[in-house]
Image (cartoon, rainbow, N blue to C red; front, side):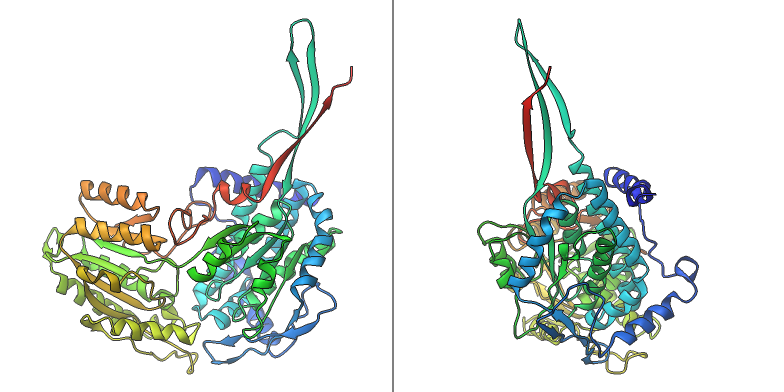
Length: 555
């Protein structure tokens, strides 16, 4: 059985899911022993521990120019001690160019099969990757397993499915017969999707796989070799992914340099050296707006970015305000607000929030929210694992910055004890009251556990402010609570025009932070928070171009 025959049914299911948009998951998100094996968690943890203070030698990249590594665990606050093979930008690009001819001439079916196989191999390392993610990003165990493993793999599969579908959109060849009266013009025509060139994926420190694998797999399925430049603080999760891709490439007789890891250090980063090289044609990036804008400004590049944004919550009316407060408290605590979808600005009318039991005042809602935050973070069985740890110590400065905005502080940020890691760097959300007139103070993303409660004249002003912020400063998510259909339509129209997805009236187990592969478009690409969307057709078709060939038909 060929590799394509092995995976063609999986590929078809993924393509069907992409079009149907209903729930689909190729990789189970629950780390159950019944699904992954009785010893899978222990084996993964043991493998992670065995990698510490050693060279990472899983990669099939020969003759390294140096060995580098500066990762530090936010839970242990000490270096991991893992060293990775390092190469100059010129060496990486030279090796990628040499591998390109073979990869672009590999059939679409075979490329897809190799990539799906690599994801199945990655599945065998989900638990190892979970611990790698925990101790580089600070994510809690469950998030680290799900987001870095199954959810990331599903997003990669989604990119493969989208790419395969677009690459197969048109026939490979056609006999063309044009009647001309007394004779016909007959041509044999063929079309070939040609890749754009070398691809660079620039990773982030908080979601090193989830944000990186869509671009990586989108470029690979469309025939472009890829260089993965992980964040210096979170290399291991993507090193595991790249290693599995390289192994499957080699097993199928393909140069593993089709996909390379490019680790660097804080004091000697090579991102610009790679990005500015004329051979690099495609760039995927997640991170700060400043560097993202620099990449977008490079000539001769097609750049896909996810940058910073200011996410809003619009509170108008609700069926059960206590469930709303519970849901939003969890949303702002999840991974200590270190998510690009985490809400920051809560717009609340000065007249309060309408409910069936009467109007809940601004102060009453602020009290409910802070009580729910405290109830969650002070729960020893929940708080430490929901909050996780702060990836970068600089993030803590944003809570101090929020305190200096001048508004009433409803809740101070504080550290809590993690029962498993006594040195974990932790921070609970700070909650600060603001006024709509202080717009200049809440137009900036304060990445991390920061909540700003903004008192507005009415819901119309709330919507105006939220949509204006999204349009001018970027937003990836918006949560809205209203029981009024007219208000709902107003929010949909204005936030839609600001290219911001809206989640209405979420309570219970689903939160505004979460996006589902094969169903939710992550980032719209229509406001300053990013110019691309995970994952829509444009995300794939910009990576290749159709080229036609024709000649007279014989006979």
